[in-house]
Image (cartoon, one colour):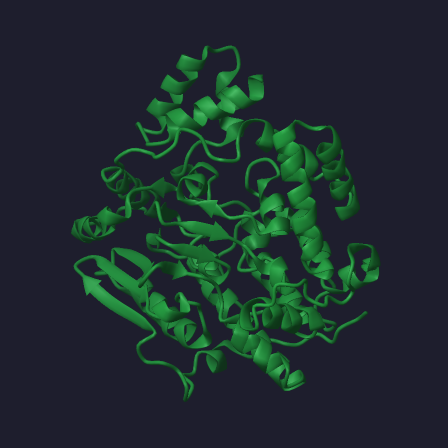
Amino acid sequence: MLILMQYATPTADLLKAQQDDDPDDVIFTNNYGVRSIELNRPKKLNSLNGSMARKIIPRLQEWAKSELAGVVVIKGSGRAFCAGGDVAALANWNKEGPEGQQRSSDYFGLEYKLDHLIATYTKPYVAFMDGITMGGGVGLSIHAPFRIATENTLFAMPETTIGFFPDVGASFFLPRMEGALGTYLALTSEQLKGIDAFYHGVATHYIHSSTLQQLESRLAELQFPDYMTLDERFKIINATIEEFSTGLPAERPHITGELRKTIDSVFHSDQPDINSILASLEQVSQNGPADLQTWAKKTIDTIRTRSPISVAVTLQQMRIGRQWSIAQTFQREYDIAAQFMSHPDFVEGVTARLIERRKERPNWQPNTLEDVKKVDVDAFFAGAANGTKLPLISEVDYKEYPHAWIGLPKESEIMREASGKKAEDVVASLMEKYEGKQGVREKVAEVLDRFKS
């Protein structure tokens, strides 16, 4: 099934204010060196729409040039940081045919321009992931050098539940998660709570929500000389956030031990297709320990309730996205999103799950994973027929996050450090390297326990 490709509207046109834009859906404030962005649609869980993106982009551009703007902070009002994009509006547009589908595609083009601007921003950018952080909210935070989880954080990429795919740069960050966690989260929409988001690298820091306001005030006091490099500024901000670390609520993430090893085995990149993954899950459901049998059965049911085309596209995305640069990621995802806007599963999924909230499985097309054809999946990755790409605001590009050192040490680093050393020496060495960062001791212990067992 070949779907006609839709083309990106020029950036200048996308940034023009529209008649129905809400003047109060984003609040901008200045406090000494801090410039804050507060998403202000609490009744809608701060779901991101075009009106908000049209305000945020020019502010970020303005602050990037300002000598007075030292740190940008983004946060949400109410109980969510940002629960996603306003997909209900997009589904309604799509019902109007090609013009409505183009309007939806334009929204994604605008959103991805904003996300790429954040991913390549030239000033320190701090995301308070306090509350629900899903979909579009992940795009506003995951590419930032500083991502703060709290006890309220609830992270997920739930797109396959609504006939879509994990976007907002998920092609870049999910395959770069440790082991096969990214693929598991992408296919199942599994949620991570605050401490788990921190241990698994979604967040770089964990602090209690009651201290966020104090932290923002402390960040406002920081002053950076003109000659100070961005990396040097990052180190100061990193140390400042650490001042507010008051302990972790758990010494291990929930996904640990045998469960983590099973996920890494079942969802590993060597698995050629979704049927192989399901076959591996079946093996675990029949022969694994009792708790893993229960988990495997639940995971099979979960995957089979998702949109089959979404699951198949998402798995291919996880397999090839690791090779894309950050710019290619948003350009390729724009092409895929435009295809989904023309596919019936998006309207069906959003209507069933979010608008009508039906309990029964949506009427997906095709209806089973076995019915999905390779040519249908490949069509989502074909790109525009004339080779056009989504124009981005920033020209900066990279293949790996330049700020990866700010979070906890990676498993690979821990295992390299562990070669021929006692566990306590590994902890001591990495604690020194990461300047006593909260969570290093616990992460090292978890990794060493898992790899030796």
